[in-house]
Image (cartoon, rainbow, N blue to C red; front, side, top):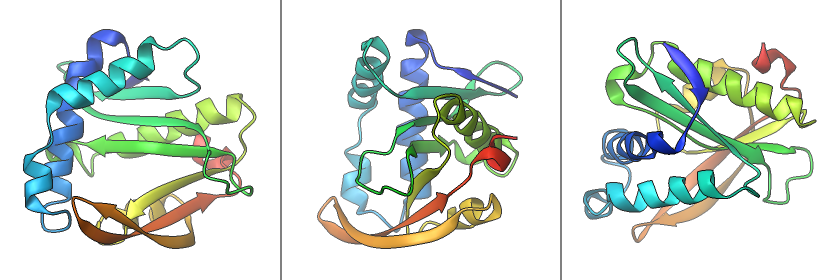
Length: 173
């Protein structure tokens, strides 16, 4: 497996991982009609816009399997939600279901932590749906519960939980 910064020619594969992982990871949590309405094209446009913007203050990493197929991605940057104790944030981290529990998520988190650390962000925050079993992944990496808040996705009110790392040096390896 290889983790590397994403390139413009990766955006379609990233969009596929984004949509497909939402449909598998959030089935039974997020309304089914919302998941069915997700489109590769809109996610591709979103990631392309970020990568094409020279002022984008974020990073997008991809994880590839041995044949070179993108199996996951993570996006990180400055924490913008007024949580002063945390200066960095994981905006998104998604893996195809078949790629989960094989080290790609940990490698993506490490790459993001290293990138943030290199930009003087010593802490980071990540939000996860409370019903998402992946919460244990963040806890296993040392994330500490910070707070909860309600969000709306597809007409459903869901609880989201923030996990934080006050010192990301260990996470960065």
